[in-house]
Image 1 (cartoon, rainbow, N blue to C red):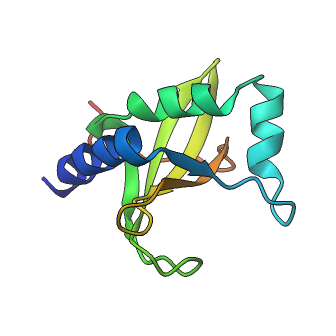
Image 2: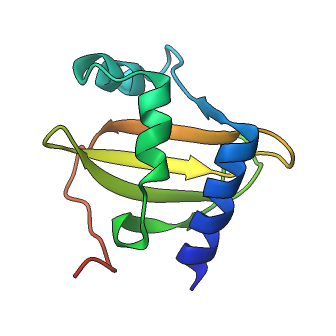
Length: 114
C-alpha cells in the first residue's frame, strides 16, 4: 500500500536526517499550536514517529511550495485536540519537512480508520 510505503520511508529518513518544522511568520498556526500545547520540536518528532496508516487523511498531494516531493496529510489526537499534520520527505539526503502541525480547522476524514 502506498501510504505504508511512504510512512516506512518517511520514518526512516526522520531518524537518519531529522526534521524541519515550518514556523515562519507568514503562517503562524504551527507555532501557535506548539505554544498552546506546550510542545517542543523533539515532542513533535516523537508524535510523528507514532503516525500509522489509520492516521492517513490525504495524499500524495503536489508540492507547490518547495517543489521537492509529494505532501501527505495525517491527523493525530494530541492532548485531546485533533492535529492536522502535513509532511513530506524533503530533498534527498536532507531533513524531512513538517509543513503543517496545527489544530485541525475542518473535519478530517480517515479512509483507513476502523
